[in-house]
Image (cartoon, rainbow, N blue to C red; front, side):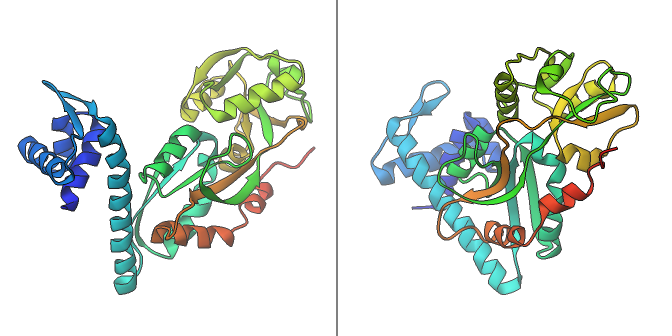
Amino acid sequence: MLLRNLRYLAALAREGHFARAAKACAVTQPTLSAGIKQLEEELGLLLVRRGQRFEGLTSEGERMLGWARRILADTESLEQEASELREGLVGRLRIGAIPVTLPMLALRTSPFLASPPQVTVAILSLTSNEIQRGLDDFSLDAGVTYLDNEPLAHVRTIPLYRERFYFFTPSGNPLAGRRTVRWEEVAAQPLCLLTPDMQNRRILNAQFAEKGAAPHASVETNSVLTLWAHVRSGTWSTVLPHPFLFLFGEPEGMRAIPLEPGEHDYTIGLVVPDRDPLTPSARELMRITEGLNVAGVMDASLPKPA
């Protein structure tokens, strides 16, 4: 059985289109189609539902796709392991991170890249559900997400920090002079928040609900950059975890005020698939992360109470 035919099947499932899959594999469409046909003949199964265009995988094809992804992932890991033995760690580390963790990722990727400089790190901003799918189908080596709220399945974890929330608001807001603010006070403000499909937004909604408050977000976005731009415009306020203070500090013309603690707080951590062996890059990332004090570095950057 040729590995390239497994790659063709995985690419077709990912792209959902014969021509795009062929382009992703750097082959012609007839070559890709012939390779998948050869795979079907070897397995004695119909894998692809064909019409005038790709119509999806058969139920047998879906089951074989899982095996194909595992075999391809193991092959890539084997090649990376062999390269590490010859010349040090090389290859690509693929990390999926929920948007609210993006400000602190450099604290982890910088020491990782200082050790094996031949590795390329790819960071994708994803929802927690997308991270779960990426770890399951081997398109991700690691993730950064919540560990104790809607936790992922079949993963190994390393806690990084416990999230604390701040109210970011224009300096002219009547609440701007406060040392702390209450959740119910924030709920009454014109807010820009992440969209409800983001786990951070679901956590915020739960925190507001615990205080009997129901915020109205006049702007919702799945982009932290878009959210930040709206808040900087001076019209809206928002609630974000403390890594954004680590990244930006307290922006000019704005105040970052701690919210009174809710009944729950949540841990952000590194997750990797619970499998043996781990990919060499994921294994090295775990080793380096265990020696980092991410929480301490971020805490040192927070503004001191007046």
